[in-house]
Image (cartoon, rainbow, N blue to C red; front, side, top):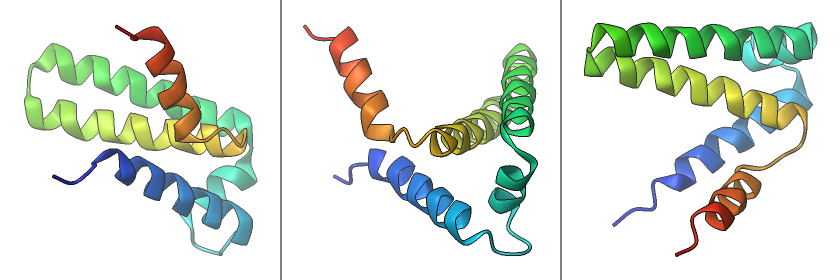
Length: 97
């Protein structure tokens, strides 16, 4: 079985690469150029879209919007140099059984 959590790490690493290279035409680079306020606005927008999708009760729409939310959250984590592993560690602490 494939560890699907590696996908978040891979996306995060690509975000860091785009942040560091600031390649022209890169959506991620444009977010970093616009600054933290723009990144946080995107997270807020995507969270609202998750709520609407959930209210619409359409699984495909929910999945799409949560993926957008996770992506933009990873961008914010990249801004702060916080890795997904640190989030996994925090969740593990909370749910030890």
